[in-house]
Length: 418
Image (cartoon, rainbow, N blue to C red; front, side):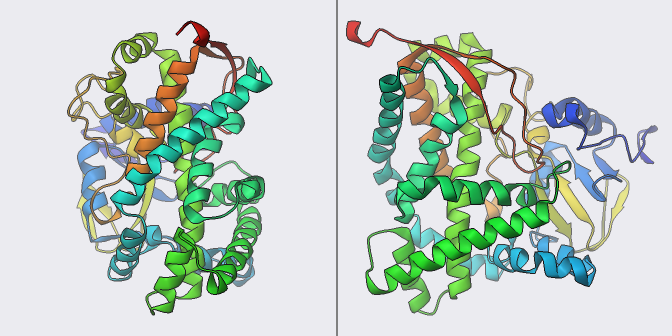
């Protein structure tokens, strides 16, 4: 039992595979936050951390490790190791799963490739991509469509594919590979064989980018892959690290932002007063994006491993214990946010933890913010109303927070009168 202040909760109290919890995890997590902020979950065989100060401290703490894949792999029997060996080998090149000094080296390379100037220079292209997608919907005359497949996924996927320098025509196959990897990366709890799916997805993605790298070796271009090839040729990267970094750029560059745009659109449907305020003062959209990131952010949790034994809220965390830090729960902690249940686009300051803190702060945060701001602004400008035609079902994943499908009905503004 986990006991805090005399209150006990069973280790099976929190079941992340429960359909109701997948759909809305906050009620259970908020109870953990109040009664058992350092909670051992038998279902996850992990600690679950829910309070803001604790989550932020772990994000910053060098005594916990981001390398959760190596211990996972080592704990498997040989038959299962062979099944996931290729998947783990490639994913272990990701900076997200590295600790210093390897993390520091990889991060410096990524910072050289994706600078703030590169992101700023992308904004005209993001505007054009969003306008083209909305125009395409107009041309089709669609009043009902799936918002994720027709818009929310296509915006960041188009941006990141242009950034990498790969054809947008390859989007469908890369999106399929990404969807196969997602249950493994996201710690799905009720999905089928996520290991086999992940292996298939990572193998397809790796083959794709190995081919792209070979093309740049003879014909360099002004794109991210060419810059990474130059880093490899300078001795800063191996080919496996290069390919892994390409996969990370693609996966991280569109999965999270798709969820940001989808979650944000649903919130603006749910809170018409916020939508009205943005129509009156479009300059508030930057703040609105921050509140979307806090209120229903695309990052549900992060996973860490304990390196040094220490005590937290009366519980002893031991080396190699796995820890889920529940980011969205922390962003609703009343100890940090006044009235956290209120969606307030004027909230300032808004120190949410969605993009992480410290060395692992999300490199793509400025790009995600720009895409969210531009996409949501243009949606409000184009459509007078967007409504769900059927309820959405959230993905079975602890790490990501979003939906795969989002059927909507829209009403267009009379643009000819403007």
